[in-house]
Image (cartoon, rainbow, N blue to C red; front, side, top):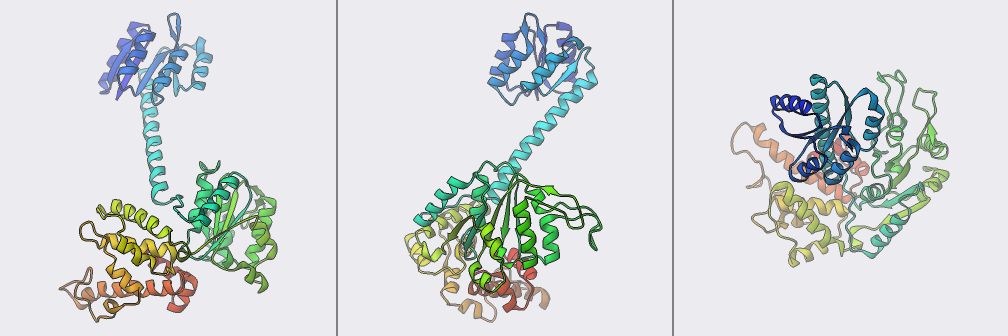
Length: 460
């Protein structure tokens, strides 16, 4: 680490130079205003310790000029008791801390080390945020479709308002991606984006998940918990699969949307929130309203602006664009060098009707990159299955089954075979039900939670 000592008293410079060199810092020192700027211009300075008074010159002005050259330099001001107000003014202009004279070696070392640790933590936080945005909170809605482009144009016009939004469309069409687009391109982008799947939880758990609960509110509530509404304050709350919410929970949600306040489960304190609510569903809410399964007043409260995402089969121009995007994504993930989509593969992909929409296409490209030899995308296995040619799946035991063990106990040899068939069965049932996990789980005779866990395990 490089540290610059700027003080017009030579004794202070000498003492601090010895102190920091013992701590294995690379030390530069000067008592001259202009020379300090020259050092910052030519050296990679991490920390500058600046005296408030530099003869006829002002340390705060030097601080401003240093930050004009390099905003990342940590600046600590040195001041006497008589000029503490000047040090406070310097902190308003970007100083990280100030040290009182006479200088205590232990305190100045502690201050410098503390500020460096904070800087490292901030850089780590920025890195983690960028990784999160790239791998989890992707909001780039890639499209060549005019209808989707029109939706994005409208989104850009209303994204900074508080208006609630309803997004409809089949599973896998990109409803959550669009909701992230609203959030991460709006004035709320630096606040929290919080999502909750309304179909994945029972009524009791969903109420606790949305509104939080107080300690002792119910069996198992061992401590206070903040709900999604509270966590999304000043940000965006995404309510996925809103059509699966019970009428009782719908009534509570409507009240919160109207009053912008709520109480935790088991609590009596009103908590106010400022957030944007986006709801999504793959169900026909107008039909649910006729069947008395969805509240009409909640529908109109959520449906201030509505957007419908058409299925992938109705926007074939997006298939090559998305395919090449996924090829690039999985090339990075698996350290492969698969070439962009060939004309032959493009035609093969466009011929399929994609009941699982973009999610299904992503899964096909994922496996195609993973199974590729060299730079050619391997779509043979996936497209044979998609087009109804299940000869590979119907073989008793494939000769080249991935992960198949050639030795060991019967259980050890069966494990990868069973996993292979389980994955294929799950995929076909999900495709048949357009990736509706609730109906797919019913056909398979398992719980939705179990199906969700297996979907995650097999990356479906």
